[in-house]
Length: 289
Image (cartoon, rainbow, N blue to C red):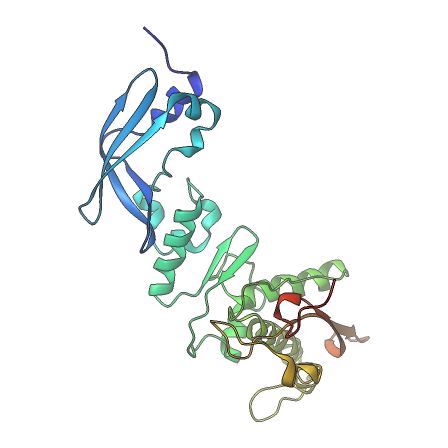
């Protein structure tokens, strides 16, 4: 009688009847399915499944293939207590962190108008393509002085963390904003800069000082100047994509400069912005090689 390799037997122990797993789906990407039966032979393993749509699915795996990589088994669903909105605010806390778990967690939060989700030190943002009341000065006050994780995931939490680390350690901090076309990178960077311009003023107000003056829209002079420094090429050199009619072809490195006076109050004193061509694939003409 043949014995399954130890790593295969250990992996299969998690795949018992009624266990929920994720299987690929053409329409939704992934769909949940429950195990009805597990058939094990010396050469192959078969899982008989029923999806949440009521479809029957059978998956077959060669034992030799499983011995080389048990991860080819379908991803397991996380325990129910981890599927609550408050538990999903940081995906790195999930027992099983894989593609369908990430997608389903972000989708669940997005459907409840929670567009921000942590994954460790990374903040995942989903563009809602409509205005949300998430960026008021009062919201900035709520995140001021709070540790990341004390409140719901937010751009302001990331900006606050960088700002306080800069003040405490006296060292430069970096925030990387990345994503596909139309994801909202430019808008996210704008709100981060607005936080920096506003939070310094809030801190100074609390201390009895004020350094920055906002206009009627709540935009501070330095921030407005930084946001207005996009190169003239942006006005006619952007590219249309399937998700964005006016997608920037340029990456930007923005350096915001702060100063502290003898009273210990902090203010923005200026900024530097550098642009570089990010995607040559968006050029109108293909260069000759």
